[in-house]
Image (cartoon, rainbow, N blue to C red; front, side, top):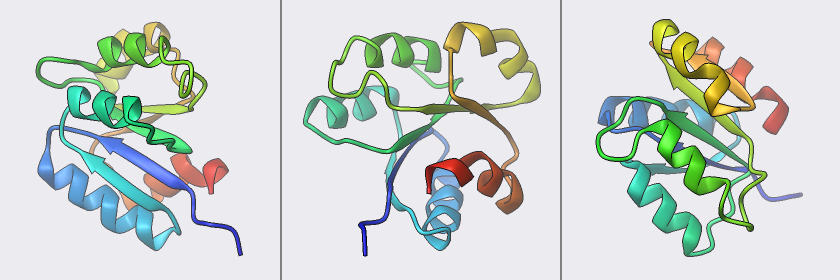
Length: 121
């Protein structure tokens, strides 16, 4: 049996990290939850190779757009699919700039998370 896919979830809200961790593990993912874009970039620079990244757009210090710019400069993970998550208004405002593989509206539900991650299982 192949190893479960690794999902990195990046959000500064602990309740979102916990929710995604619990739901994604039920879906068969291994989850690496990190609370800042800076911390996520450090893990990626240290060699973490997630199959998909779930990224909050509105965070302190390094927001989603800045994170994406750094990610695209890292050869080992530049093609990792990123699902942008935020409110409808934020996704509408920044969506095209992010060039994300998909979007996930907050508040997150089990059904919306399953739909967003289905193709990466």
